[in-house]
Amino acid sequence: MVDISNPLVLGIVGTVDTPFRAVSIATEGGYAYVADQLRGLQVVRLNSSESPVFLGVATTPRDANEVVVSGSYAYIAGAYSHLVIADISVPTEPYIVGTVGVGTVLGTANGVAVAGSHAYINRSSGDLDVVDVTDPANPRIVGSVETPGSGYGALVSGTYAYLACDTAGMVVVDIADPASPQVVGRSDTWGSARKVALLGSYAYVADFDWGLQVVDIADPLNPTMMERIDTEGYAGGVAASGHHVFLASSDFLVFDVSDPFNAVLVADMELPADISDVFVSGSYAYVTDAIYGVQVIDITDPANPLIVGNVSAMGSVLGVAITGSYLYVAGDVAALAGNATLLILPAQCDAVSAVVSDGLPSVSRLLGAVPNPFNPQTTISFDLPHQANVSLRIYDLTGRLVRTLLSNKVAGSGRNNVVWQGRDEAGRQVSSGVYFCRLEAGRYSESMRMVLVR
Image (cartoon, rainbow, N blue to C red; front, side, top):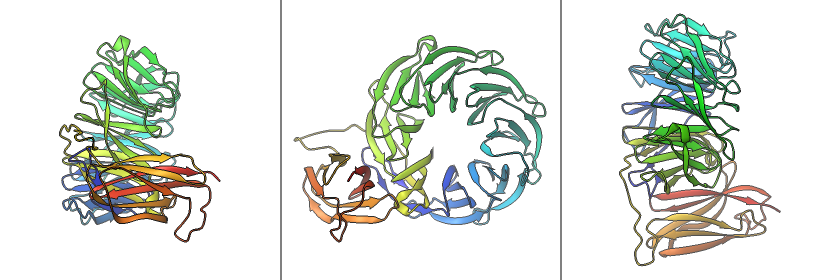
């Protein structure tokens, strides 16, 4: 759990390990429902922000890929089970009440959405299944439609589902009659459609190797490509808010789409690693990557985004969600020796401005290592707004502690530099590879990636 009441200073205040890899999170009230890839549904109590604890487990037949919560039920999409429904009315005793497709050849379910009395299952094959969940104990597929391409992401809006179908582009399915869903439109997006965001009568598609695609969906039966914007890197995530679209590519890109016919790039922010997804809430964007975790970006002025915080999971962040006053981060976290971890952080993100006075930094910040990659040594730098007790440790990719450079030592305000000579606690040279440096100063903590090349 990460406290983001002040986005300028983020600190993990609680963690809980799930048995394997947490790939999706949904929240309801004071609970988090985690899809653990091998161990099904994990229920975590969040009321005590300092110590999230497991309340119950509902084991699914096999891989759990995504979970959504609606009312008193959790809906879990998986590889072997297709759809599992768990009763979560008593969080300490969740139990499976219904399943669809266990042990069949329906294929992997990559995503699930719930609207009214129906769940919509997006298969890796690209097919869309409509499941009647009026009676959760007896869910049944009432309609299916074969769609082109492989299913990656879906949105339901009104009587239409908009699917990101890989090389087949964006596919529109009429779901007005759940028993007879029909593919009614398609827009070839050139690349590999990964995610869709809707804004008014336009769809914005993260098209992987072909950047951002703008599609007019005023007539869902005839979606019309309006603009193709090639971007560097691979576009894997997209979000829309107001008159702006935020794209997760190699960089964090912001487009002004006041005129959808002429989307204008207004900001191109380079981040430490290629970002994989983006989530927008209020005045902040949360971007994820496989190395540094989550970067918090102030988008009050979309043309001038500003990094104001960082949550380093020291591994692959697989999901981010905000509900109530907390930010929930799911990832395959190397710092915990490969165990998946749920990080939960208070998420009241009021606008905060950085103030610099007397030449001192306004916030604690791990600045980086120079050189990086390095051989045989590197200098790690960090800023402190005031004197503080600091710990600085080096970990390898498995999360094993390699070297403690500082252990609760007093460091002065301003710029601080510490040299790591590429040696472990016993003074032995460590091998070439990726290492993580973690700084802790009071409630502040941050990690960064370093590469040693012998």
